[in-house]
Length: 292
Image (cartoon, rainbow, N blue to C red; front, top):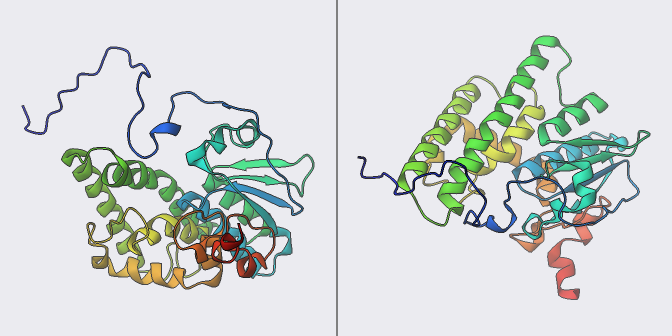
């Protein structure tokens, strides 16, 4: 028997009898659907975003800010804070927008009836096609971009739900799952590093939704913003990923996108709700919290 073997013997039929433990135990449950009635607010702009500045949420706010920076006025949006630790995602209004009760969730009020879009990759693709931006039109380039977009959708759960959970959030530090998911996280970084040794951006020379999606997870990881794990994963050894991550990070729209629906960290980087471009200058928490 392995020295790392667990004493736990799974029952024949699993039952939800205790919380799962860890930082998010209070909101984890094996059933879907709302837990309470709560309508979602609706602002004045075409797009209504309900989110939090996790990596998946950052993808969408960066995308919207990039579109606005391109002069696309139709991408104007209101961003409403969903506090997942408080169970906002289980309100009846949110579940109507996303039956999976995960952020981000988007409503497009520029069409009738208003259209819901959920899952971050679907939202990026929807916005890219809606405005013919940040997604190549030529078939081969488009395919390559979507290859990498869906690579991120399939890979990030190993980084977040696997590595991040066991390394940063699990109540006990267990060697086997940390080793297992560290190996996979580093393999994924190596995949990106090899790709970026040949191209300026993920899918080629052009900046696309593939960069936005992947940067929100892997760029922020190597920049030391996820799980306090940069040293542990030796991220500086992935020199091409580091070059790319810093270049994306320097984009003004990316900085703004990181701020939206952020409720943690530096108060100057927290813009809980976004309803106008001027909010970045006047409504961050360092400016309004002393008045609360």
